[in-house]
Each structure stands twice: as structure tokens, then as C-alpha cells.
Length: 409
Image 1 (spheres, rainbow, N blue to C red):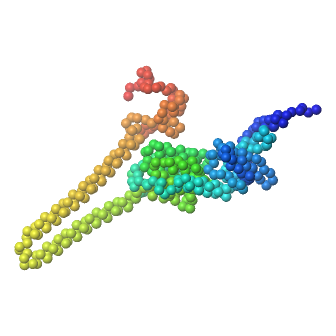
Image 2 (image 1 turned 90 degrees about the vertical axis):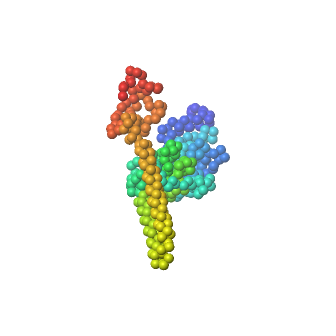
Image 3 (image 1 turned 90 degrees about the horizontal axis):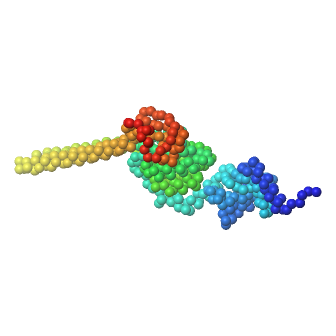
């Protein structure tokens, strides 16, 4: 005769079987949302259904809060979950840890939901947009170091404003991890305060490729920036959540560079035009004076007016000197400002620091600044002026090295 067990023991045993199955502890399921309930506790309760079957699902508040949209009945989704049994009711169900729209229609619905919610919160308000600086000295770039967007922006800068300097914060521009990388790069550039404007850029791609720029985390990070942010994602017809929350939207990375950087050749042409206009005004004034002189010379009373002519000549000479001095002072002032700016930029160059005998220590491609970033056995790259070296950390000391390990420089 079979052993007699309690219902509790049965349910507990079945639950243990399900949770011990390696396949069922992390499985992805595609299905249609049915009977969706957003409980006041914050949990999501719903069923996943396909053509013939359905299964109950629950998504706890901690996981549901990370979604940028709310599922709706009829939405096609893919869930990542574990399979178990609700022991009290003997209910077979899946516990959802992550949920994604499946297909363009569901993705577009999620996009519209997030867009409406952020707009209601005021993240797209025009009065919140920060103006771009007219002459930025340093520009932060958030993009892939191997992407075409970086090349396009640097090409425009070389043509329009070669004096511009760029600080690249590399980040992935597609994939599941890309949003965290993009948000982190923007946050670092803003916190360091070394750039006047930040460009978040990516070249063209499919809507799926650009979907990472619709993330809520990235949108809120950009909104919280003190530094103006320019969105330069995709092609002219592509719009993302980032475009709406950024201080300025550029149709392409090339257009972003043209909007951020002043047009150097056009400014030089304008200076030449102003100089020619000033010269024409002086010549016109001289012509007027000559005409007055010629008219006076034909009068019979000319003999009594030599003093007036002399005074007019003196006034003309004074005006010419005043104009010449003003032009000279203005040119000298602009030249001095340019020299100071060039000297400041040169003093900030890392190459200048390295040329004085210093070196920079890099770990995994990033500069080492804090004691906590190093451990014995770490592999470091040392950058000197014109060469580099690889080394391994032997030990780490607080303060200066012991006397026996010091080397006279």
C-alpha cells in the first residue's frame, strides 16, 4: 500500500522538485499577457497565454518597479523567470524577474507609456532646457570609441573649430548593458565638471538597435545633469526618449557637432567684412571732408577761412588716430585673450605633465586615483612621455615608500 502523506507534504515535495530542476530555475517564456492586475502592494499578477495553454505568473514589486512600462492585457512579452509551486494553494506558477515587450507593437506601446509618464512629470518641459555655450572649450562625448559617430564629430570639429578639446566617456550603444553604461558615463562627465557640454551620440540603426536610448534610467540621469546635454542618436527620422529629455536634439552626430561648435571660417569672414566696412566708412568721411574743402575753396570768402580748414584737418587727424587706436586695442585684447586661452589649454594637457617626468598609472584602461583601486598582483600600464611600460603591483604602502625602497631621482 502507498504511503499516506498530508497535502502540505505533497505540495512541499512537488515544489522542491520544481525548484531543484536546473532548467526551470532560469527560463525565458514568450506569451500574451492576460488577466493583468497591478495590486496595491506593487506586485503584478497575470497569466501568460499562447495558442493552447496558459500559466499563472507573478512579478514582485522589487522587480516590477524596474520596468519602464506597465504590461497590458493582450501585450506580447518575453519573461525571464523561475518555475515553482505556490505551496498554500498548490498552484503551479512562474515567478517573473524581468519582462520585455515582444514585437514592434508592444515595444511601441511601452515607448508611448513611458513618454506620457515622463512628460507628465515635466522632464520634457521647454523651460527646463539649458542653453548651450557659444564657445565651448571642452566637450564631453558619450559614445562607443569604435563607432562611426565619434569619427563624424571629430571630423566636423577639425573643420569648424580646431581649438575644441574632447573628453570621451566610452559606453556601449546597444544591448542589455548599454543603458547602465550610457547613464554612468553621462553622470561621471557631469559630476567631474570638466566639460561645457555633453553629446550623447550613436549612428543610425534599426529601431531595435536604438531602443536602449528609450530607457528611463538614462532619461532621468540626463534630466538631472547640470551640464547641457545634446542628443545625437540615429537618423533624422528617428526619435527616442533621450531626444525629448535632452536640452537639444540633433538629427545626426554630424549635426550635433555643427550645433555645438562655432563656425570658425564664418567668424573669420565676418571679421574681414567688419574691417572692410570700417575702412569704407573712413574713406567716405575723407571724401566728404574733401568735398567740403573744395566747395569752400571756390568761395570768395575762402581767404578768411584758413583757420576753419585747419581745424577740420586736425579733427580728421584726431578721428583717424582715435579709430586706429580703437582698432589696435581691440585686436590686441582679442590676441591676448586667445594667447591666455591657448596657454590654459596647453597647461591642462596631460602630455605636458608627462614631459615633466611624471607618469600615469592605468588599470584596465582607467586611471588609478585612489588607494582602494589597487591590490597586490594587479597589472598596471605606466604611461610616460613618448613611451609606456607594463608592471605588476608588488605591495602597497600607506604614505611614502620605506627608505630601502626609495630611489634617488
